[in-house]
Length: 349
Image (cartoon, rainbow, N blue to C red; front, side):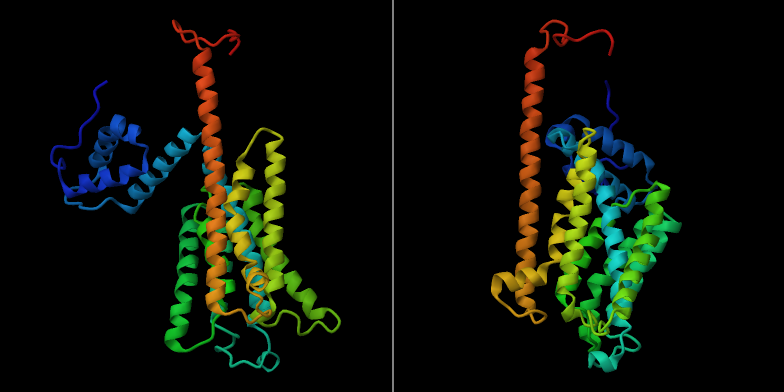
């Protein structure tokens, strides 16, 4: 079959070379077989004078290349798990945002003994308000609007430490910011067509965070529980454990129906869930006292968690790829050399 070549006016142009660089996301044999066709299709759709692929085209190519690589590993379930992991990450962030905003940021400065940042304890209030807006957007305007809001929430979280340093205002510790960034990255895979249940979950998560905050406020002698970021490591670790346990439970339930999506989602969320326990793990590894873990040790511990999470995912992909190759080899070995039919196959399929 003849494959379309890049548009003549774009052949050899910087735009074509940039599209071809994006093609590296695909497996090598796929690039060789269909690269010209893919590039030609994209070049036919662009207007004259364009020198760079649009962000939509770039993301489309990268996502398609990732899916093709996962197909080669027999791990398409990992791609299908991204929206599930994104939903779990977003609702965890919304619940934590509601709790930390009400319980920590809006606490009476006379109780905390800190110089407030305006009406809040730190600039972290901006982050939590931002993620609550993301949750509301995911409920009311799912799809591209929700993903755009998630990008804004993530950029806000990443930028806040620099802004706080520049204007000399307090901010949440790294042991809080690192898992927020990791969970925020996961939310970028929010699905375009969530179910009504998924759309309602952010409201439920915000209500849960609010209810827990109110419970601590009304508890007997509980007025000073979790009113500082330095007193929240245990609560964050529990949130991470709950996130992991709930997603694992969903994964095991799906696995009973021969659906490995939930188990892949559990692997994807292992790192964010682990980062929620960074401070606690730092204390266990380095012997630091609670609430006073140096930033350097937090970064070191967070790096170890990231490496462990990446290693787990790599091992899982390697094992799945080996299993996939074994199954394919067995199928090919059992195929009829003349017609390609499988032994025992019936006409019912």
